[in-house]
Image (cartoon, rainbow, N blue to C red; front, side, top):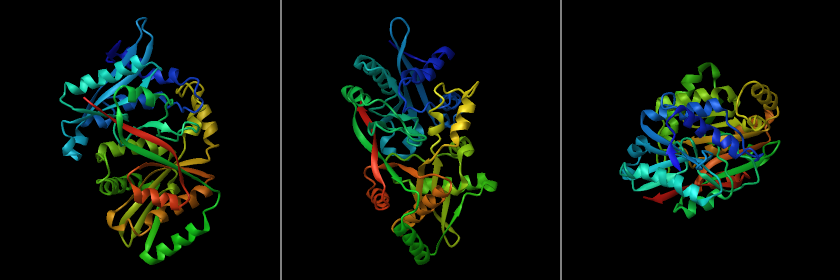
Length: 372
């Protein structure tokens, strides 16, 4: 039986389900429950200034929860992609026991909610949009997820595909490692800087919110032609920046200039999942905060969360310059492994760029479409 999660008790069940579902999975990194509550809040999450969602919980006849899902209407996506207006709705936060009937019922509930609003395609999983956690892990189950990337059992793919979901797009995660920057990359960085007169600088924490505005403008301009891209509003960008500020390492956020013009930037973050994975309850108190702070010191992994370059400068190699900076400064801070994610399977230029740096694909996340 699947019902909307509208009461406080039902919402608590919606939040709690993954903590029970993944209890025996050592790779899963439990998010902080307070962060999940803020994400789902229609009041505190600025996503809901241009969207709506319905949360559903599946239960057995005795009341035991066996799954959850959200149906999502995103007006910002429709404005950015007029061809999808009134056609593509979304689902997210999918979790289920390994029973096809349960998955069918959950996906059916989300589909019905979207169908009554006139949508003809259901796309996901997205939690809530392409700017959040998105995609279903379909390859790379033997390693843990990094910060802000999804994780799920291998059999979720079977549940979704048997329920009528087909591939829309794959998102790739690349990994690279090394305690020193390869000499060829160092030389390439020097050559590019001299040839194109590029200069780089790190994030200035004293001007944090001004720096966020620079990132917002370039982010929305650099990604506007990407598949599924939805520009972030000022409120959404500030909300994300506020949540990430405690884990930011200024040296790993880098801006590229040509003269006075900002032409690119990259953001890498410590893989805070390393610390979160030790706090299985997702609660800060009474012992969660101590565990997180203790294990935070052991983080040696990072994730390149985003890298953007203005279109006219994309064939200059400035992306390699940004990666060299992050690699060099990451080593200085004790990071010797990095994930670059995610990259559209169709983005040949970006894929070729990271592969030339020695990164290799090791995880695949899939976005599905289901006709309604």
